Amino acid sequence: MGLEYLIEPFKYEFMIRSLITAIASGMMLPLLGSFTINRNMGFMADAMAHATMPIIAVGVFFGFSISALGIPAAILVALFLGFVIKNTNIGEDTSIGIIFSSFFALGFVLISLLNVSINLEDLLFGQILAVSYFDVFAILTLFIVLLFFFLVFYKQLLFYSFDPIGAQIRGLNTSFLNYLFLIMLSLAIIGSLQTVGIILVLSMLIIPAASAKLLSKTFNYTTIIGVVFGVISSVSGLLLSYYFNLPSGPSMALVATGIFIICFILQKLRNPIYFGTSEI
Amino acid sequence: MKVKNKNKNLIISDGCCVQYGDTLALDNVSFSVSKGKKVAVVGPNGGGKSTLFNAMTGLVPLANGSIKIYGEDPDEAKKKIGYIPQKNLINWNFPLTVRQVVEMGLIERKTLNPFSKKNTQVVEESINQVGLKDEINKNVNDLSGGQLQRVFIARTLTQGSEILLLDEAFSAVDVGAQEDLMEIINDIKLDGKTILIATHDINNIEEKFDEVICLNRHCCAFGDSSEVLTQEVMEEMYGSHNSMFLNHSPGNHGENDGS
Image (cartoon, rainbow over all chains, first blue to last red; front, side, top):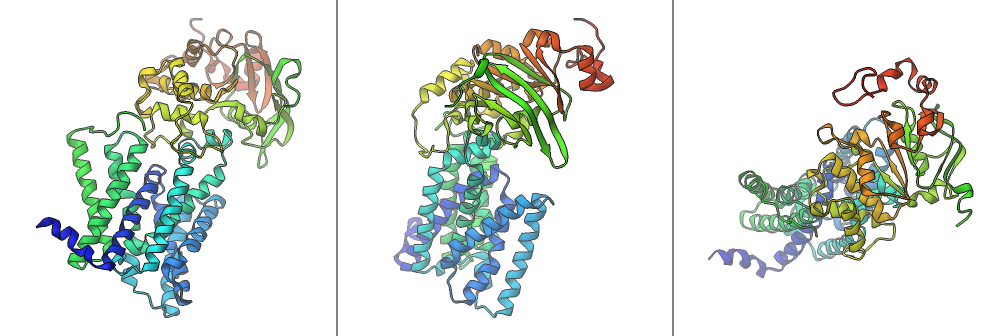
């Protein structure tokens, strides 16, 4: 029966590992995605994912695993991007674009020059079935740290994102909040590289959050529903990946897009079927 | 706290200068505002109205002179100021409710509990006071311009600010739902609060405000609203086109007809 198809794969240990990773990625990306889409930072997020290429290339060359590189790479990329955007006056989009493409290119060149043994397809499109125990440990730690900071600074981040000047006058440390968000975003992205891959990490970041935005009236609901959609997408993507031997990133991205299309049609049909008429 | 307020002046600007690169945005601006006054800050675009507010809230440093609020420098005093931003400085993508926006008045650097529900009463009282009780759970994007102003005024009430700064307030109100901000303010009964409004609308200014600060990079004039706007001051502020700014309202760009 249908249910067996859902349960049967999880008698293998590697599938349990993959499941935990899928859920963690499926939760942390949309969590930050709700902020990302409203702050129009999708391009920035995509650049972060791509800019990790050279760091991964050099790191793997020296024998580190991608998970072990995660945290320092994330912080480095976030601070660098934040700094460059703040201190160049050629426009945010342009500076992001330059970093995006040049770092991505540098990554490929380094992989080639250093003869690094990385499966490029896995790195670009994700290979969740190959996660190790260490990977699971790394991504779970990341997830917990991220969730902690997200909850603690949720109100301040929301205030800052909605009304930056008001937040500054109110005495919030806006420059800290700005970098905190960039680092959190970068951590979620790098933590999810093995699940979704560099190229498609953006899809899991923004599509579940965008679908949720179509259906919900308040920001808190957008965030919660986005996380639910994210987990549905990542777990379904994992199963598709298992049964049809597909790369996990594209499978998850397509499920997320499917959900988006359904939400879009629902919203058009019953405009508006909002969740949450009251605040939470 | 240090000197509370010498001669009842809450805000004292003494020769305040603000410089952006090589340009002086504010040049030697001096005035003082006492408690409970309603003050219009008028002047042409680029005249320094926003810059003055930015200086008062510590967003831009002073190149020279000083601003004291409650006897303190802007950086220390800014938390006591309720600031109502220009509409285009807000990120309207966020689907927030009236309650959430008003609650922001309570958020401080040490606000770290995402689930705390304390002070709900303060929030609800502020919302009732501005007359938005029925809109409390509405999305702010569904409100009219006048209602939005009320939301942000409610936010400053939650903060307990005694000083309100409203930047470009009138232009933030969309023409379709234009409500005179002073009417809103009178309606809300903000007695005792000191209110500064940066505005383009200098019609009937003496009826609406107690005092006027005229800015054209430097302070052209400051004083009682019925006396300040003389022909010379108008000319100094707006040049020879000063008549264009009189009796200027939506649908009426005429000369001095009426009033």
